[in-house]
Image (cartoon, rainbow, N blue to C red; front, side, top):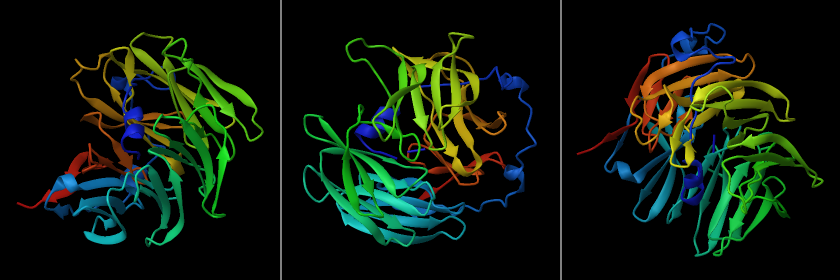
Length: 370
């Protein structure tokens, strides 16, 4: 899933989904699936909590492996990025910079780390680190805010959109291997890679506000095509993408539709959704990219988000088979980042807990000293 702070994070923190009917049975009827036994066969993860003096200085980012996570420590007016080995509690510093790290994101192959920091006002520096903290590429762009999107089929390329003070923007393709930064003209500042050379964006009509709009694709030649109509939300993961739209079955439900990168539909599921004023609440989610599996939170019924208090179900959807499985129940809708094998998930506002799915329990990732 994507780890932006400020403007970009706020953009993605609104909206919903929850319960199935086409390829998935109602919640109470979903049996355990047996085609994916990885959850039961993996070794149990031993979690050594990170001991800190002030938990507010710690920000967890994502997994580097099934046992290593990345976190940032903000202390003494500088930021240090660490790799933390969960079983042993060993922490390895990878990068230190004065000031505040605005962005940290693990690469699709989980062998690199993208960070954003700034040494001057109205300027952003991006750097790509390897697993040992070596800086493989760096670029500085005039901006007050940047949005980045990693190409999941060719992680040497990143889409970077730089915003000016008046919120005008310029988009670039940053080739971290060739050390090149090229401008690209896109119709939307928050477009995403739809494949190795295409981009996806929802074409909102600002003159006629609406909850729904078409999902568009633009290729390297500039040709624009429509991938889906009447979309409320969409997210691309390189090899596949999903859209979220109103369900034809019930006003209390939304439909997740899953597509391959070329637009062929792979499956769909209808789930309950929650309303937040004139918007939907989109529950947090993550993808297990090596297994073509989608993890997401769903409420047990539809309704108003501000009145809802019945908890959320962590659910998986397998794109290859169209099967759904309940992973854990009774959770809150909070940020989640899952391990490469899908057996464990960092969870919480600061990803400060770990869900051990096979053991059906949550353990703290932080131990605060008195």
